[in-house]
Image 1: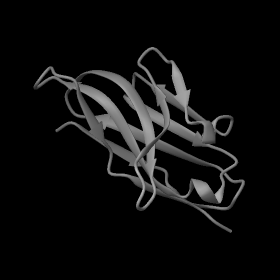
Image 2 (image 1 turned 30 degrees about the vertical axis):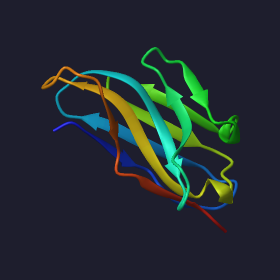
Image 3 (image 1 turned 60 degrees about the horizontal axis):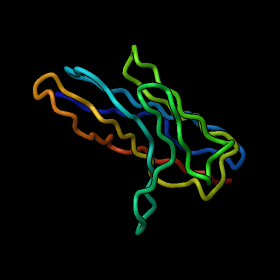
Length: 121
């Protein structure tokens, strides 16, 4: 079964750092873009950062200079290094990836289960 599994959320003080990780598992032929989104209660899910299979990256203006997305194609993983965290970064973060499962050979967008990030003193 193809899935994305996230880890690394938690509680951190303002100004602190957290590293989120997301691993794609299962019988996967290829992986396209991978990214991180976040969604606060009552709000739309918003893009935080994305990286293509070629390594290009894009960030939301609110996290530029503080967050860094990276991927390890050999391990089918994507990471989000979050520095200088602010209380307004508090919410649930979701991993997203466009995967081509061997079973279907069709590209489908997958979501992780979400991981809570709380920035508070």
